[in-house]
Length: 290
Length: 298
Image 1: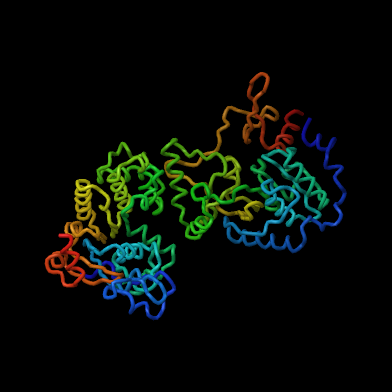
Image 2: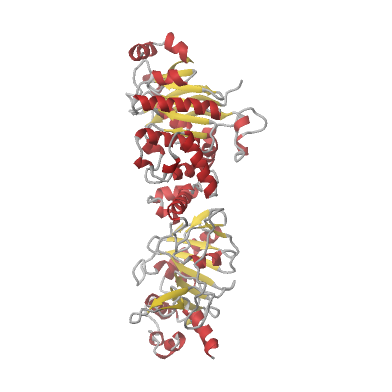
């Protein structure tokens, strides 16, 4: 089976950079800050494959580059280097130009124009942030928040959009009667579920989850995780799950990457990583959390 | 008394200064006019796109029609016939001031007849009579940015225009419908020009929006304070934003008629009698109303 998305040597540097950035940062040096020029190597040489209907976990301490990676893949930030390719079978109809000839993979998506990137994002991706304020417009009704993605994808029929919003809110256990209330009236857990509904509105293939359960209390966490698991099998989603919580990763993901100081230090099956961690940092992580 | 007669008898324009010494034809120097005409050409080439330009100081305050005035002055020729209206009226203060000024610096002929004019400057209305391909309509614009309602940052609105990222404008309309059952924008109704840019048609009533679509006339929009020029060229599609199940509609004046000329097919102003409290309706376009009432009263 071929991966849905191939990512090779993805890097993101904040700052001007110098010749010594690469050798002075990384897990061995235990920093991502270059002492010579002061640049931050937030992501460095990250390669991964994401398969269809798979949940891939990314763990690491704060500042290890997990969220940066998600923002690069969601085209919110521009990568400093690297390649991101999409399998031909899932290339959206609105962008026929990204697949050249009969190659199995598209050209480098990181080189597309902003307009193309946004079209691609509208057609394929959904994202759920740790903080609902990032993913939702707090003053706009919940139904409107979901409709925004649909409007971006060209929907122009109010009742059909409302019907779709109602369906999604029902799936994410928000009472449909509160559809026209703004998310600022809701509790944290409800806001997170509205965010998930919004992310699912365009039937994405790929869902990015950036620390979704951090900040929710334990019983709500359990319900949200349960829901995500059900949605994944129902909608056939590929998910990239970012978390510092190994429990969440253990529950959701089949495969896991461990990041430290902007680099991937270990990758493999989640069970294997949790039972038999190889890298010193992973051992520390597993020992301290489980 | 009718407006054109009143203007003829005690016309302040008749005694306007024959010529203001020391200024070139059309007040602005040729370099300034050239820059504005270049911006106009660019605006015509990219329908609906806001072209920045160096707005000059005019002898009226910014925000009182300086954008339209600069376009008028840069385009006007000695043989042009000018009409200036303010919300449809030929005789209101803003229109008369601008007329007086343009006359003083160009000596062109003035008219209140839409058909007779070659160049019309207007504030917030489009004349009722369909204009021809020999005429140009210049609209004064207070807020050229249609997306300003949803996004305060200029940098961000420019990005949204560049990427045709208009979902937030549509979301604004969606929310309007959810809360009030219909779109509540009464003037400045956003339109899509040539299938590309969402554009502010200036604060014309919804009644006038369909007149922009596939017109024979060139429409030029000037915002002096905001330093933007944009255009809707002739035979360009102009579509008001609407949903499949919530169509755009114009104001409804059914059952009402102009108390002066009897018109039932024009945009009407409601006038309330201060003493008796009675309501009556008059054409907003006074030039057209005059023309009609002359034949109607005969």
